[in-house]
Length: 170
Image (cartoon, rainbow, N blue to C red; front, top):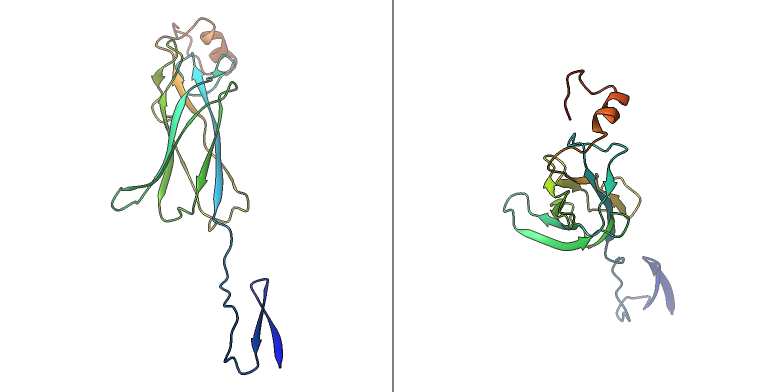
């Protein structure tokens, strides 16, 4: 006599006495795939945050790396380039819950806006299903470069935001 066993969404047939088994089914699912998205911008006022004078940088190169927190060995790495809107999307294949994963800026294609911004060169992200997030998209913080010198109009923008000291000379 045959009975049908249902395991992990797959039907398996076996005999009553379990002497003969036609298949063994282990619970498995597709490997984790995450999309890491973000953008890169230029800060022409050198204030290290976006203003209305900021713009997105097309063609900026960046890298996502996951590494073991103890050995610091790189366990996953992928490079990317921003699109015409300064946006990037990197595909991470696998679960890196025990790793530190970060997106890091490499290079700006804009000669006038290529000074790395302290604190905004790297964005840490979580690449695991075991995080409480029920979406396969991970959003990185904005990353940016600055101009060597502030452009005209920055004092007015900072005045509007209430951030410019009266004696500021930009």
